[in-house]
Image 1: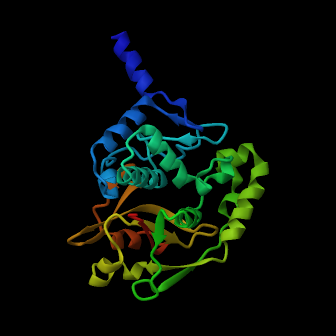
Image 2: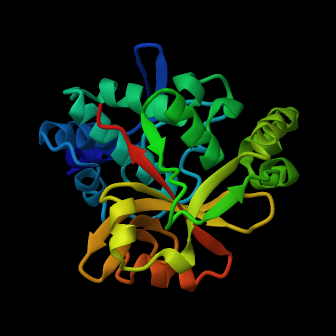
Length: 281
């Protein structure tokens, strides 16, 4: 009994290991889960996202170290970490990379500016920054059609993190970093992106042509100082477009039973959706 309990504790307790030049915080259960998934041979991002359905929603899972390190947590997810995890798995599978070390390398590339960890500000905190950086590296492409249903334009205006440093563990502990975050906010402020307003998120041939299964959906909002309110993956059903997401409402990863149009209508601060496509080459 004691032996089995020790094995369970070792599987769940976070550890820090060095993969190449990377210090990674993870549990044995995480590395086993990642290599098991990659051994299956699937390449669809939706396939990987669906493997985490019912995993509990937990916020702030990346804020576990005093210094900035790559964190892998397959047991607790928020909307961003679900998107990053499923995307990293799909990219690894398409490149025939199947080790936990391979996965850590790809995840770091997605999560940090130009794939390099250099303190807390090097993490891509705002999703517009995440899109821009990963697009520069050729990993994703944001759909920016000038015709319907992309009939609205979001002009970015960011200051939430620098104006609310006490809400962030690292900024509260290291107020000297606020100036770096504020500089990143200024660099993005004023940029403009086309998006699909929520009135256009309906079950139409036009929307089905514009949004594909497995696209990353970034929900735009009118909250002061923010760009994106929530993330997930596009899933088409007969009744329309749905969202596969780590849901704070359901407290777990779900494929929303209601259509995305219905979902958006229940959130007055949500204004529409930006569409980000994972490149296949």
